[in-house]
Image 1: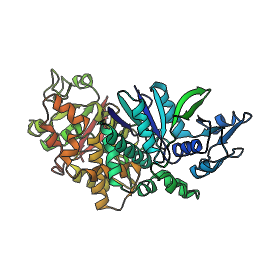
Image 2 (image 1 turned 120 degrees about the horizontal axis):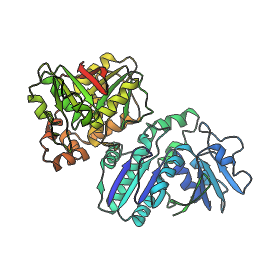
Image 3 (image 1 turned 180 degrees about the vertical axis):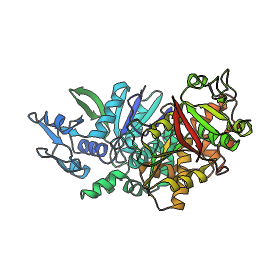
Image 4 (image 1 turned 90 degrees about the vertical axis):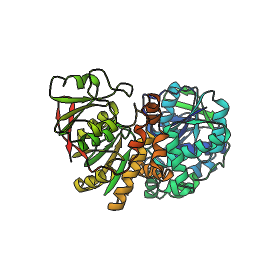
Length: 237
Length: 237
């Protein structure tokens, strides 16, 4: 099984098989939490405007502007909040720029797209191997076109699980991610050093960082199951 | 001093200050070797065709097609060969796709562009700090749009030197490069695992890999000093 890690989304990337999309602070962590809380489906959209287009439907709007809940939205993008949110049986529309962009790119060519984080790392790696025939790719979302230490670290944890479960041939990106994982035995240390964590601290949301640093706490793995307009529809995989 | 590492060239990148371009297997290693051998200047061009346009001038043509010397060229792209080449006082035209592309991108906005490798790592880091006022950026060339373990490792070695000489604020990319450096105490091990090294082995040029893995053996640092047509002109910095 080929194991590939792309450290940033790039338009020319082609995925023949399975892709794990990682935006660990916070979109893909929060996505697993909404499924934990009983959400029926997640609609990932690329902007607040695209989310507001669903306002008159029976959905829950979640998103962030500068880290915080946008006006007119039901929820922010905090995984702690998502886990407790009354979303049982509902559709949650998640506005997330970097995560949606990466998932959209992966979905253009891949057979299967999963949302992965540290929180669901073990389950996501297992599901990826179940679905894959030749390659598991991990696509790090990054932050506005810059590589994210948090996402690459998470890719390293996923790569480690994948390598434990199956013999894999890692590409250069996978070797880089594994090295980052090995350099930081403590996930919270790695995540805390990232630019994404610094941005959260800046808006008083630093409590989300230790939440996102929890490893393999959830068996919920969002799987791309369709599209409606600009939205990518994820359901439990 | 800000310390930034970009793991791949991207067109939208803007460099306010100094950039160290890294294509360790083999272009930036070979470039230092040509200066060691006494070359007066290096013209980096993006293709074999662009190099052949200089054929009637008093220059030495160096390049590779599938790792080997192209027909009509005086030299290949081997640093071992470059070090012994009779290029004293001459202009060497180097056809190198990934290295030239990265250097060209850096040169569009940066104040100073240097070519760095393990071979000249110490001198390149020192020169970068001499020239910089606010930021040293390290731009990894990669290989046809894929991140290279060899280049990111070299960025880590450069980042380590920079951090020893000056207090630096590393970005996420720099932290990733430093982690890769720490995961592989032996440079030859890191370089040997890269896709670039595998490609060289495939054409019988594996002896270039231990050459490229030598650290801080040269004080020659090519510095971008001008352009002529498609060519970027580098002279000793």
